[in-house]
Image 1 (cartoon, helix red, strand yellow):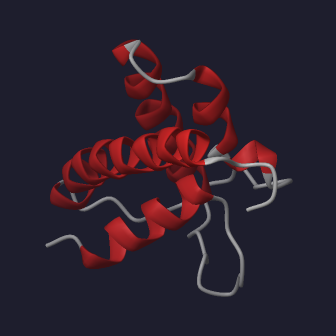
Image 2: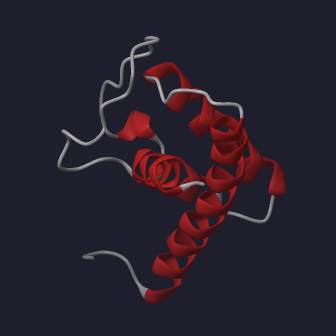
Length: 105
């Protein structure tokens, strides 16, 4: 990536890895409860996971902001099932939520 040195890539990778752990934990709770993945739930999971990262205070806020869906554009906040499969490119947070929701047991 142009403009990203090794240290910056490391910091971004650290955020992505910690976000994946947070998302997996949250998704498991919703899957166990039998919740359907709706757009509103996608936002709720993302918000909760990002809050967990912010509370850890050992990650750079700038990099946490890079993985949010708001950096991608409009994502609806409705109670309709989220169809993330039809999108070719998703922000990091949504990609992790989609993967976790479809692979969680």
